[in-house]
Image (cartoon, rainbow, N blue to C red):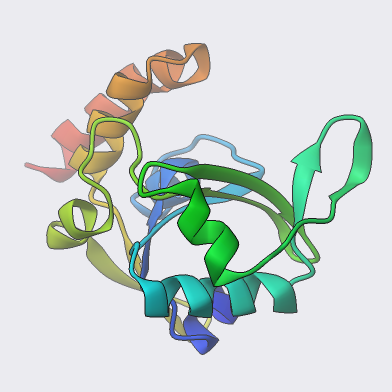
Length: 158
């Protein structure tokens, strides 16, 4: 999935559980969370990448997901604080233009780290930013992960 985004030249920061795992967290996640830049050209590239992955809106009642207008125009209509939960041929992806507790792509990019995964180079949110976002989201699963993530941050900051 990430390779499709990179191949389409989508500007994004990997966030959430997968980014935390890349920092050394032992948590488990079943999806990829990204914070893409919210500009017209990037939204068009993101839509093209999502179409190449046969993206559909994730719905509990429909295992294969619901089709939608996967276009830059649709993504623009979501607005800069929009969220889109998708299922794709490469797995589930959550697109969050402004994750809780952050200013979005530019804010997250400023402290992000560059990581290579099987030849694909991506930006992952800093561990501090992951913690900040999970604390602001205040979901049960995020609250459960925070002590572990804070211990990890303390260890890697030494």
